[in-house]
Length: 463
Image 1 (tube, rainbow, N blue to C red):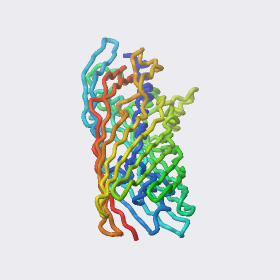
Image 2: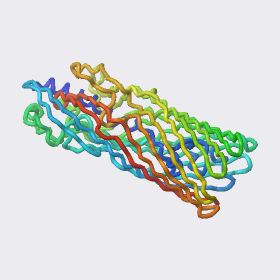
Image 3: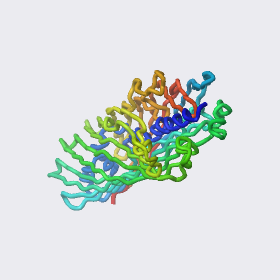
Image 4: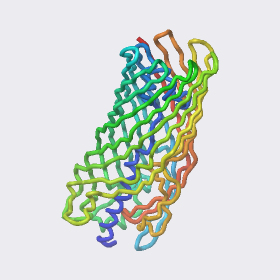
């Protein structure tokens, strides 16, 4: 294999694989409360049965006439499996292997905490701490396409102080500042048991099995805002509307690689804690909620949320220490990938049953449209005409359905406990991806299982 071809292949691999991990933010997390989980988060910005409404609507603090705190945690256990054929294209011929990896989406605990504090008859204050976005996928190091997807992780925490004003106990409006902290890790490697290691090793000068292509870790704070309103149509009916503005954290951290940029430019050493920046365009959302209590025993919740993923078109990174003195600079900016996400809706319906004063029982259903676009991304010239899907292994996003149930028990007028459970599932999707490191590599397969179990518990206390 010629060294000039190998240098071009390494750069192409960095461009084509970095985007997969960066798009951990492609999943918007709904898990803001245990009570909401029980009704599939229908009308979560309108009901206000505890202070967790502050995550969805800053006007929610106007519903409380005493200091109220809520706090809980949700356990998310996803299971995503993938399998397919991997074809390596080499000067001496093509080689095709089967590969699979099971349960590569990592389980997680998602905490939350809230405070609603009335100031006087009209004004109230709120404080919410919860998670907006998150994802972790971690493939086995023996998976034959770890050069396309290996480890992807995104953790976010949102701290949102808010203020609300109540007009005559009928209309309420609230405004919040959102302080978002984001921490991300992206790692791509050559498989541990790389079948063509003996073919590639002479050109690289070392055995590439397990070599690190790109390891990027970064974090950042960003500030945005949200606004919401509540309309008390009657004592039994309430309507909520809320808007959360987009956020644009610019992750800054360390970049490491066993191959870059030294294989591209032999006079430069490999990245070793080099400083890098990557900007994420996280979407704005609009949520509508409607709640009606028919009588002493039954209530209905309806919800719809629109997420503006159309703003997320591409990823670009900068690695200032890798300035090569050429035009254009390959790393400044480094155009990673055209993602072409699409906006979508989430629709939910929930029912509540009140058998007695102390107990509330809930059930819910939701249909959640994924952000990953269907169809093919054809402009990839390096793919030599092979079909390449927008959907990737690191983001096996798809339309999902939720079935949920839960309940609340009130110990007294001050203390209550919520519990919720949910099962999510989605259709299997075709995934076709291409990279050029360490040789042109094509994955043709898809997901064989997409599902998740969620369990949540929270405590509420009124002073």
